[in-house]
Amino acid sequence: MNERKLLQLEMDRTLRPEGERPSSTTVMTRRTFLHKSLCYGAAGAATYALLPLINTMDVAFAADGQSFRFAWLSDTHLYPKSLNTRFVDKMVRAVKEIQGMNPPADFLIFGGDLAQLGDPVELKLGAELLGEIKIKKHFIPGEHDWYLDMGKTWSKMFGAPPWTFDHKGVRFIGLDTVSHGPDYWTARKMTPQERMGHMATLDGSVAGPWAGLGSEQLKWLNSTLSSWGKDKPVIIFSHNPLYEYYPQWNFWVRDWREVHEILKPYSNVTNIHGHTHQALYNEIGKLRSIGMLATSWPWPYAPEGVPVLTRPMIRADPGDHFDAVGWSSLAVSGMARVEYEYMMWRKEVFATAPVDSGTEDNRNQILSPRIADRL
Amino acid sequence: MVSKKNYTRLAIVLALVSLGLGMQQVYAHKEPHALDQLAAFEQVFMEQVRVGDLLFHGDGDTQKNLNVNLSRTGMACAMCHPFASDTHPHEFPKFQEQMSQFATLRDMINWCIEKPNEGERIDPDGPAMKALEAYIYWSNRNSKLDPGRH
Ligand SMILES: [Fe+2]
Ligand SMILES: [Fe+2]
Image (cartoon, rainbow over all chains, first blue to last red; front, side, top):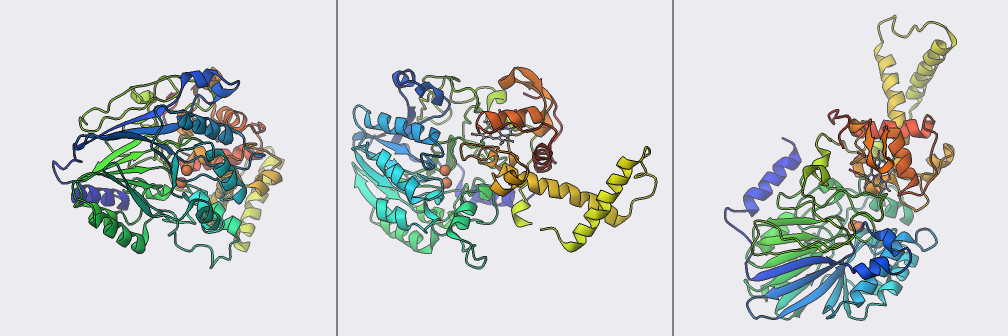
């Protein structure tokens, strides 16, 4: 058994005691929100049929009956307009639809990877496009936003995480899981562009296990939660998932054990994350984690480590822009407490047969990590 | 990087190869292989894997050297296929829905160059294609042959 498998077993053993499930007082409905009319409306709009765009969430708390909705947008990966307009077009649409929500969302979370290479031109383009959204906006960074100038432009434009606020009985927390990477650039005398280039290579090995909270932020998380009731609802936003899915692509935070140690006493925590560009669902102990979709492009499921509770989305066909347009309404089986639903701009969101699934079609695939960037 | 020693090995291999081409008969298998000869074969292969990896990750210099333009969107193959996932070299040849035809891995590489990448299709027998193929196969070398799987 390899080291990864052992780690995963350990995670299961220590963090998923028998019978332990998240609190049932939160009912969450997730849907990806796209208007058919918009798909057919503007010329060319229909060419983006493939990708799910925004994620909206209905959060209804049985306890005090206050329900509300907020929107999540992430992983837009903007290049300068002159190089790539596809990503711009998709973000423009998402922005329009968020602004068009009726009733309006209470706020928007931007979940990181606004830019592709951290270029101020890209970040400014992103800010300009987001300017069309008039509701309150909260930002957490992705690695693509950060490693050109170590977050200088980002922090100036969008403020520095971590942050917290309370809204209608929920404590919201925004984390920074990207800025604590080990220094791989100084000794090798890299230019900022080279540093960014390695960070922007998902399957590269040079940047190493960069995703994490770091000890300062762990302390902050601990004290931020300690003033909140153990059974009161908490929603934590992070760019990376707060559990170990696939470390080689930083589909994790390296200090997940410490995070879970801190979260253990709280019975009603939901983590919402970006970075993985795919539909994901996991429960560990009392923590539930939901992976959000990108507007830019979908990533294949990792060759191992996909949480068993995830209902995989259907394989993407990059060539058929009109593929499966429409709405979908689904409930995840075996999870009466959390009801979540995608309404994505394609006929089917989740695979019903193995052959169509983003995980099961790789039946005989065994991948080996690259070596070229270590030669 | 290729070391001096490896260059010598490479030279031996190239000499062997040109010898084989120049003559009617092929001599390569008549004598037992020496260890450093095998190492040199491996070296030739891994160099192709390395070049293919660079192409797959969008390296500009390598594309220029080989006179190919694999993408006009800024996107590299690896952005959708990390570790060459989902390229499924072990499944080819197969009927390819996107093209409505029975297709090879090389057909599909060119398809992805032209469609999602909006790049320029490459010579199906040229050095860039061979290098991409080397990288994709190497990354999937433990996959189980499964030709025809959709
Ligand atoms: Fe991303
Ligand atoms: Fe990311």
